Image 1: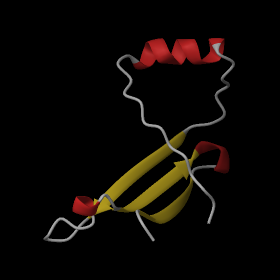
Image 2 (image 1 turned 90 degrees about the horizontal axis):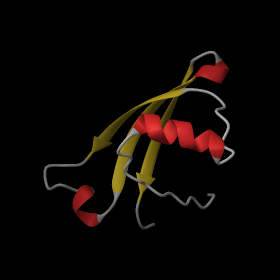
Image 3 (image 1 turned 180 degrees about the vertical axis):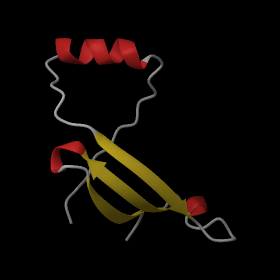
Length: 77
């Protein structure tokens, strides 16, 4: 399994950021639509243990809106 590094940064103004990204050399490639469902049980697991179980539905514009489904577990192995 490949290593993944992720950073989540709160954006206050999307329009301002959208203008600044091209000035930093960023190029828009395509549009992706994602819908996430997060799961736990009645005891709050896996959320209470800093783990996550997510079902993601993803449609990508460049693949003629082909739908892909991913089940993701995040946490210790």
